[in-house]
Amino acid sequence: MEYTKNQIKYNWKKDIEDFTYKLQYPFGENNKSDLAKSLSAIPEESSDKKNSLTSYSEATNYNAPIGQEYDDYQYSYEEGYFKAFKLIIAGSSNDSESFLMPALFFARHYIELSLKDEITNLSIATGSKFSIGNKESHCLTKLSNSFKKLLEENDLNILQEKFFDIIESIDKLSPKSDEFRYTTDVSGKYNLPIDFTDDKESPNVINLIALGQYLNYIYLNLYSLYFILEDNEESLLADTVFENPYVKGLLYGVVHSKISKKLNKSSEDQITSKIKECISTVISNNNLKIDSSDIKVDKFDDGYQVLLGTIPCQVDTYKNENTIFLIRPNRGNIPPRFGHFF
Image 1 (tube, rainbow, N blue to C red):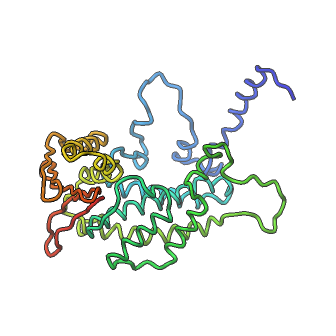
Image 2 (tube, rainbow, N blue to C red; image 1 turned 135 degrees about the vertical axis):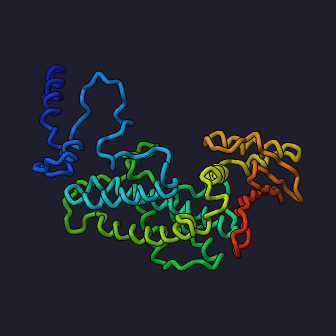
Image 3 (cartoon, one colour; image 1 turned 30 degrees about the vertical axis):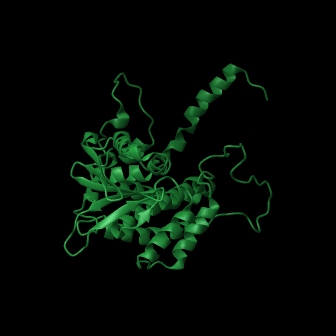
């Protein structure tokens, strides 16, 4: 069937009017509440240049603060993806094929963020090493193996093998992390198979109820550890320098930087300036409220001591490798710990 350009434009405008009923989702047609009306509406034409997207709504619970005014970044990101995942599963029954895409992405991303954060928290609390750079950045199985090793090395592992099996099973569904985000990969190949068969006996499906139960299990175990380490005034990292979000921001920036590569390629007389340069870059890139002009680097034993104002750090170099120590102060009977990075 052939269409003129005018016919296409006419049909397009008509369809826009005809499909407004779809905006009512997830509310029923008979729901006349103010919230249903607001969330089923489109922006009104207005001469007012004020951006309504960043303006306060009369429905106060829907005003989402930007910049973590109340909760820390770790909580907001992890809790946000977990709760969004649960809402997706709860509403998936009428279009499960479409809901699968965001559901699996959110599940996978929640696990990735949580594992990375708990590896960081646990490394600080126990004084364990972890490498600088984005190694194992998306591989859930490798991250869970690192997490398991860290727990076992510090005699802290209470997790059943089911915990790691669940993570591995989700990782196998989306090993590259992009399969449920994009239609094709970078080479143009479809991420998911296209199947036109009518085989109803053994369809290739993912049980979204089971996926929801899997993520519940992961969440229960990881949130409980987060609560012990960082989420309350009695947690292990409370009243330490790591409670300061800017110190934690510096820590994350250093961990995901290429500082170790730069130091390994530097001569002895360049290391001091390279350390300053790397830390200044992390502070600048993340808008951290730490004055980079306060950075002082001194030779210390076999390595280097770094002072960031009142935050003591130490950088050691040995055997062509590098270790940064961020020191946290003593708390009662808990001995001082060192989060070190090589």
